[in-house]
Image 1: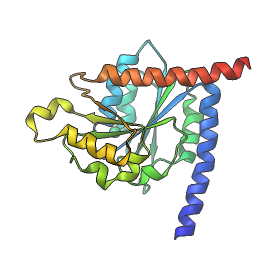
Image 2: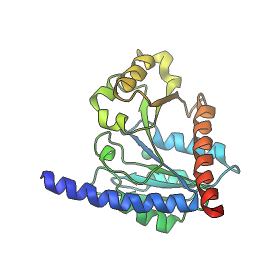
Image 3: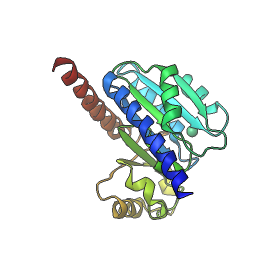
Image 4: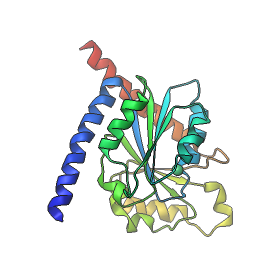
Length: 225
Ligand code: MG
């Protein structure tokens, strides 16, 4: 079993290297959004896309076990989106994403959001070639989530605490969640957001803009050197 898992991950990593090279070549910023089911990934994406409209090109790969409900929700914003159904699989893998970008053809300089299957375990193991992994934890979950799922927290650069508009109605300690995340990953960036009220959205968009500038800087230096 251990050998099979190693082979599987080695194959995935080889595809991830290819994806990363393609993203770098086109100056595409790829973000891998991970979380438990129901943390608000799709709602956050819709609000994000609406706010970025007219500013920068966006494309979306939606991962779910079944249905194309989320891709249809995203397409209503006008952004190109494709749905990848993983069937019995519990995560997107780099090979699926490679096919996804062949169909989607994200334009140069765009931001590609990859909404992973809702699951805090398996997606942690599979590099998709993303620049950043962004983990969402909603305030309706437990403050101990980072301690229970350390692999995901350790491999993420940014944690978004979502649905913070609900905080007044809950006994949820966002600071305790942040402290637990930093026990696992001291360098993780943490933002509180609400797609519903817009709280924290400017900071989240700031993160995207800064990361995209860096993706484009790489592109420019390759072109001119
Ligand atoms: Mg979703």
